[in-house]
Length: 460
Length: 161
Image (cartoon, rainbow over all chains, first blue to last red; front, side, top):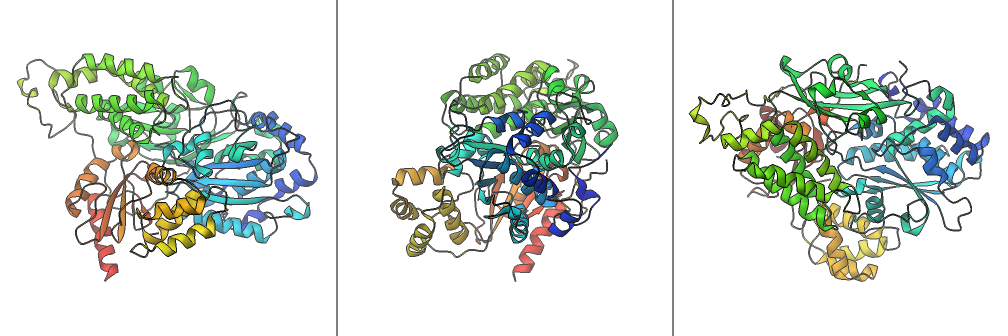
């Protein structure tokens, strides 16, 4: 398997421009500027069938082709560096280790759509990453890759970094645009789509970091090379973020379509403490959960995961073993979406709150069986009734957790407590005799006192 | 990021406003600068910014309170941000949160009585491979066990002397 997104594992100091250049860096930009027309760039990316890595999987070349060719207004490129989906950390590694690939991708995208300005919208939590990226940007500017005259071509591009301020909704592209304009990040109704009316009322392309860092490799080596990796419908390699109850959590570059079973048991070294797999969230916290039986049959590409009833999203794969309380997990998911609902649409603002409240009660053993029906009904009424998909991002987990782990929810009601808590304030569970009061071991806290390292393994 | 001047200085806010007011998306940039400088966005800043940008105070207040990162009270000298999302939770973030609250004697969103630390919750720091994660004084730490937290806290207190 060839690795191109995580070359930094083989090339020390790839983040420095002289090292990046020595390994072919900015060669794709040269080709895009001097050997290709903007149409050819768009066609090459279209041909490669690169699909957006931010979660929506929209074909990137097609998105670029929506930008009007004869726009009287300026055209903007926005790099979405607001990676905030819980369980996802690919962009953080890319910013830290290969910032020039992102910059080169941005410059090629600008050339393709005729933009002279790129805004990089970076989440506030990425303070170190912002410094690293801006250092790289300074290097690129000093070498003439960024500025009024890119590589002497006469084509100018300025790139500026904007900081987010801890709002998940800014990862939604129109929320991002509002925030960029200095407003509350209320997502916009579409149409008009950003390609027609995006940032500051001008045509805008919004691309994720990982999408953009694929672009230089496609331009340098061609769409045909790109299509040799992964399935035809979603080719290329993908950065998988593996976390949770797994022996070797971390970031792994693998071809699209990689079997989830192998990701967990081969690459990830299996389940922590030799326990049994219980569930997997395949794409970040907002997508339907897989049971262990479903998970081992799925291949990780956009269409296969969709066909199996979930979505690949950002490929934030969260693994849970048999000591996990699914009610508690869902409560955590619900708390997050309630906390992050922007408050613009009533079904989402109220619905996420109701769902969280019901789940707090259920997890504490104070719920009723009817609450499960109420949860499903609230979730259904949120779906599709809001401007953006944040409501769906909670509705999907609710509508998969409850049917797939219904017995566990009902057990909380029957016992009047959480069966997974070791100290469990368990007023009603002492009766025994009914055969259900067995207490699984409490979720273990594997707390190694070792290093504080923030590096994940990626020894695929 | 936690080095800042305490105390609200209207003239400094006005200067930040007039320096940045013509940049695209100025309001966010201005709020960030103010928080970098003072550690929070003082209540009295809103009318000054509103004037600089020709916005209503309500608009400025709306934006300043929309984003979780903007504080409205001065923080402690160091800010501790604990991740409370699913991956960290799977690896012991709940126990860690208990421990930290006990150690510091504060709830999330509060500052210790000596003004040393403010405890904040955060949802995903993008360090899920090394859960549980936290940020202490602008630095990201992974695999934070209870003992490791105590160590880091002690180091930080030590370093300050």
